[in-house]
Image (cartoon, rainbow, N blue to C red; front, side, top):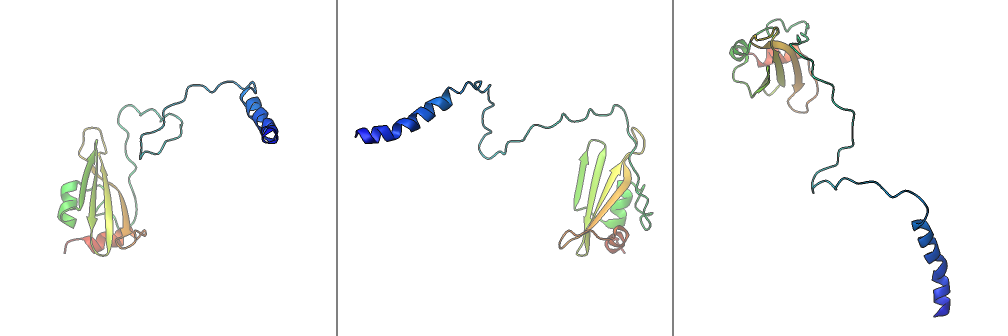
Length: 144
């Protein structure tokens, strides 16, 4: 039994020495996140919002002349019922879809207090989400 004690004595001394290493005690720790949530590492604070109205960037791409600067009602007449019609603040997104492609049209007001108009368009293949030509997608989805 004494040989067993003498074998564990150095291990016990190492463990005790680690506790008395002189390292400062850890500071207060935040509680673990609730189950199912992933902890988010700290980041820089978000940029402060710009006060007042900011004019949107307007896409200037060949073949989109009948879409860019059009209002929502005009787009609905051109493409039919939108699969998605999402409003967030003064922005609006209309999504039109068919077997060929999905067209997302982003509408922003060009001046404060004005009705949003199409300023940007994105298009992708419906089957796999690969980017496709915006103008070709718009032509494929237009009502005849």
